Image (cartoon, rainbow, N blue to C red; front, side, top):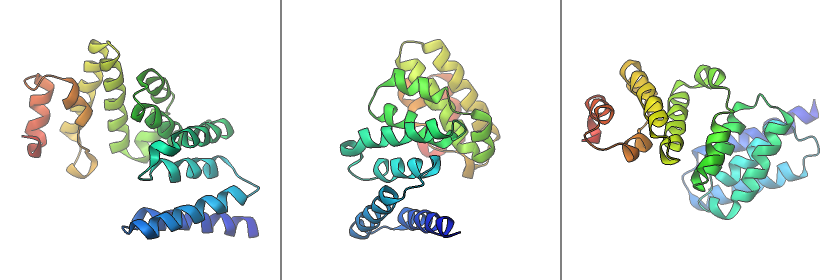
Length: 189
């Protein structure tokens, strides 16, 4: 029972971290979480995932990206069903512009579980797969993914949509998909 309460304290601190807007307080809490997790002897997949997030979501994420990648990989190794750790691992490679590795890891994400968890994340994943394919020279496959994103945008409520920045970056401004997205997301004009 003691272990569970300690783990709950760690995850509570992370929840607090997400809400903090003061940089100094954020850095202090980030350090506390890392120290608690590093000293915790019973780390599971979720603990490694959290360690990866603490660094990946920091302002100086580039400095710590190697640690984030290692922690996300460890999280997936301990629990291959940890689809969010797999997704965050893909995001690391994406941010590093290692699109082949990003695509490989995006394709490993359990899409059904992600869709059930948060449909906006699922739609963004489809867009990110399309982005990687498009930028890696597979433009037709990329466009097929962007077409799927458009279908989701047409049926999702506004709260479940995120800015389709990668789709817009890839396709010409006059492309049919971009035009239709801009009809839905009028702020993009």
